[in-house]
Amino acid sequence: MTPSSAAWTPPLAFLAALLFGSGSAVSQESPVHKSTSGPPTIVIFGASYAQQWGTPPLPGFARVINRGVGGQKTDDMLKRFNRDVIAVQPDAVLIWGHANNITKARPHDLTNNKAVIEPHYERMIEAAQKAGIDVILATEVPLTDADGWLDNLRAWIGQLRGKESYAVRTSAHIREVNDQLRSLAAREGCRILDFELVFSNKQGTRKPMYAKEDLSHISAAGYKALSAYARRELARPLMRSARVF
Figure 1 (cartoon, rainbow, N blue to C red):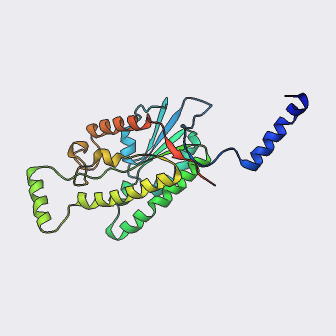
Figure 2: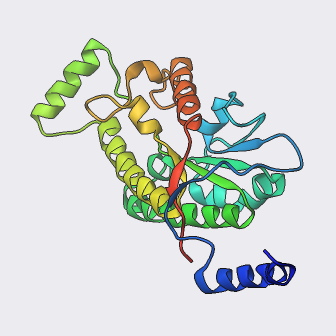
Figure 3: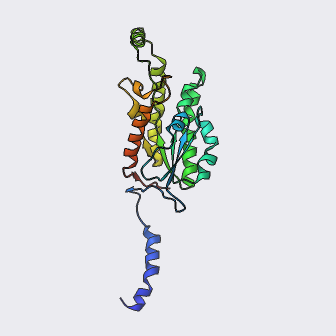
């Protein structure tokens, strides 16, 4: 190459980039965003299930911060998202917490409480992505039916009479919203941890050994299974399609 032709290389490369772009929107491996100002950090954000998980070791992150608050619904989480997530400037946030929208709803409020979950998640995702924070979503876990012989007898009689238990009815609503969350994660290019699959039995309720005596909160065995699943999933490379704007 002559000196005169070498002098034209940068302008020609620049012109080519303008005309043809730097690449196409195809499926590509997307690494976890890493901060340059400290150890890789993830915030676990949600309600009581998230809060009681604590700060488990998670692959890819040297620091785990828990910002779970018991009893909260997604509107409560949205109100504190900037303070408890954006202000921390983590590399990633794991958002897990819409069960209370369902379990705390009165019958006439249930439809509205479910309808706002996805918009609330969308706003949290948007805020995180604008701040350069990777988003991981988690499906909710179903509830548990009492498992004594008398409880099973009552459940059997109820089925004969065409009645469902509270756990069965509530778990069906949770699974419905979880389906919406999976679709949202696919649209937004977010990783999803499918906790429902870890906890569910064939009836669509929670395996009894994964529930505390209140049949709602998660047992030590449940958190052990959940943590093992999360570590396996987070250790896998994330493949997603580049979004076109």
